[in-house]
Length: 351
Length: 195
Image (tube, rainbow over all chains, first blue to last red; front, side):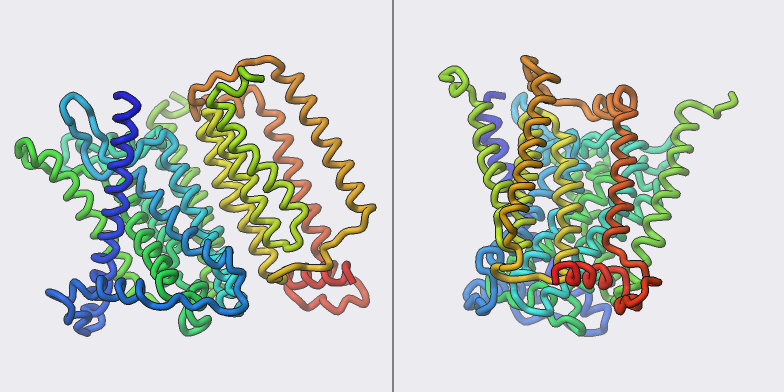
């Protein structure tokens, strides 16, 4: 490909990914409200559009036109930078996730992901660790008590669970031997031996569970939503935000939920792999996208289900769960899985 | 010099290095602790960008993950759990003697690193193809394994030193803060030291 073509493909992919994420947020918010309403025996939004689908659009439009109130005591520059700092990493992480089978246009092979980085996993961990800056900056620059408390909680929580998240990925890297998301998905094609079981990395069950739990904590979702616990610290870090600035935090939260779901699917649940039923030309790349979205939405449902089921943790429970349960378990699992992988590759030491 | 300016890599280097120097300068001259920490983030981000420019993707993203994503966040956590000043702080102004000491130490460090880098690499040309992660792992655990272990011992020493400096012995007579928790007691010590 010439330089011009590379630039054009990158531009189209980036714009498409952003448009996709923004549209998806609208659906995700509606999906969450409807599902929680069902789980709580309520009706949920049902006025705007069919099944209340346009409710989020209406809410978004309202937030766009509302006045953005700026409290007197804020540090203005950082106060404005914080919502941007929330949204940018959320949008960037999605760019490395492959959402479908690569396909040909003419003789060119187009990957259905923004880019394929060799160190994709590290990129994901690095960018998701940047998300805490938005919370900390918003909390500090607001110049108010409750946001500051939210920021202190957020920084401790995110550091604790980030460690568990990174440790959970070590067995996966040893197992697959790569950190490129594209290759991780390719390895998961086919099935185990002659069985019908797909060869997904979910066989590393502890890794999968630890990663997903830490993911829920990283996105500050219930039961780990102490950062924005309404009953304790008002709205946490976004207490002093209104209008479009608040909408940006909201967008970032839902994009992050989808990102965690999509990354978990890519790493552990086979990515876009799924039965294609031997159908012909258009289906062999439409169906993978469908499988990817279906699996991701299933995990998003788990997010909502957990939120509707579990009460919020206390702060000390949160810390002791992170440091005394999750991290020791992941360290133990690293030791065990390393032994198992070593024995599988090189045989027992005495043979 | 003309030859140097015609290469695109050098322009990229200038674009990265200028904010880096500015961030480093502002992080020591800023009158607000939180601002200092945020300027340090700019410096670290620029150093990650320099590693990207050299094709060392793994090192670059490790810098982002470890330093920007964890170490600086811990700094911010520490500042916020003790005090989180908005606006300027007057007590941060140092005497000329302290400034002189700091200038001497940083100057000596700069000279040391410059000499080490120049004697170590000299005229070696930078090959700008991506470094593989396995190569980094191998060089770290085979050729440089002893320096690597020494660095971890140094870090351990720094950790213990930090605890010793921050924590006041509860049994110490006349210590009113003995019943407080670790973080708060560290806060009290810091406040007492300045009074």
